[in-house]
Structure formats: C-alpha cells, structure tokens
Image (cartoon, rainbow, N blue to C red; front, side, top):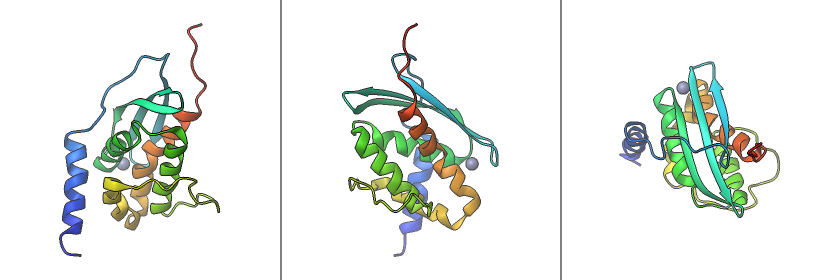
Amino acid sequence: MPGLEDLYREIILDHYRSPRNRGELPVPPARHAEGHNPLCGDEITIYLSVDDDVVSDVKVAGQGCSISQSSASMMSAAVKGKTVPEVRSLVKKFKGMMSIDTGDDPPSIDVPLGDLEALQGVVKFPVRIKCATLAWNTLLEALDAPIPSDT
Ligand code: ZN
C-alpha cells in the first residue's frame, strides 16, 4: 500500500516531537516503575494511577531514541482510561506484533492497536525491538508494583 510507511513515519515523528502525557505523578498514591534499555541508552519511568481497576492517569518521564520515546507516548495515549485487563491484553497484542513470544494464550480481550500499528515496521530491525517494547515492559512492572503506602 503506497504511502503507508510515510504515514507510519509521520505518526512516530509526531509522538516523538509532541510526546503525550509527559511528566510525573505523586508517588504515592500513584505507582511507578523504571525501565532501562542499555543497548541504546533509553530510560523510561512510567507513573500510573489505577482507580477501580481502570488506568485513570498515566505519565511518562525519561529520555532516549525516537522509537523508545514515541512508543512510550503512544502507549500512554492508548492505555489511559482502559481497564487493567484491557491494558494487559493490549501489551500482549503489541508484543505479538513485535514478534515476541507471549505464550500460547491469546489476549483475553481484543483491543485494537490503532496508531500503535505505526510501530510494526520496527520488527524488521531486531535491535530496535527492545526500544519499542521498553515502555510496555515498564508499564507491566508498574501495574504489578505494590500499591505504595504513606508509611
Ligand atoms: Zn532506543
């Protein structure tokens, strides 16, 4: 399909130039996790607020290459407002698109990838797959992080 790669490149550049949901959330009540991709030097911190099993807010801090940062921006836009089971299914679907083995079980909920499909070209560059998945692995860590207490 002519022009599709250009469209994808535009989406990635747009998220890199104007990253969504940049910033931090106070911990607690938010939870957070840090991810690091030593191969490329990418660093990402994800802040999550989860209320009644819904990701009510997400913020992204850190720095790195255009793939890691635009993937983090797209991830933040995609997961905000979704339930935790939907988010877990989306992570699985995204990793599947990146040709990462996520086990035999398909995602329990079929969540559309939307703009995230712009990153599918990354799969042709195995060294960049870690850049694209860094935010997603960090997101899972943040989801599984213990809910911080004030003590
Ligand atoms: Zn990178």
